[in-house]
Image (cartoon, rainbow, N blue to C red; front, top):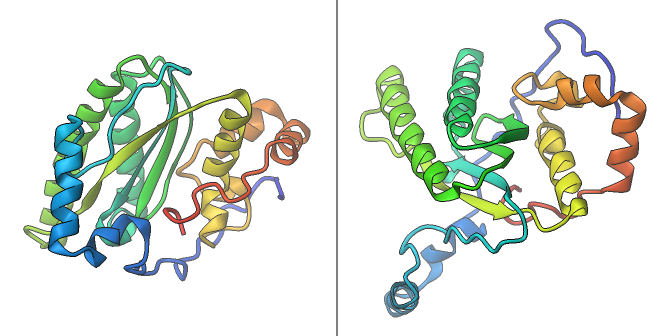
Length: 224
């Protein structure tokens, strides 16, 4: 991992944006038979789970969550322009701030986002994010002349289970632009909390946290 002040107007790569494989876990339903889909829906219905989205369980381990959402089929709708990335970042953080007591880390990428936060109102937060998705879909489709296009593939929350899980999540979020080949340094991607994080804790401490709490295969299967 390298840290440092990025050059003004540093290069941001676009070659990493690619269409996901239908083998991605997000699209496993496409390989199901009609009977298998019916059984899955029946299972979710009998357990009062959302029929077509991840369940929002609060298990009581903490009030800290990783919130993630992707554009439908990982199309780079957010990354159409720097202005749109900035707009998405501002509106997303405002939506989260309505229900979060603390926003620890975030990263907005061309086709998905991650936010680590603390809240005791996870259901209300998810509803507000759904409203944000609706408003942004309408606006971006209008701008792109893509009326009726499906922009978002919902969002999911993952409760933080431990201190190690928390810091691995911080590293995962800040490393995401590098993972996708967009930049070479955390701070090169400006639509992220990485720059302020390194500035706040210092280069040495940030490097120590990176080594102590490796991300390993964090996000594998969803964030490939």
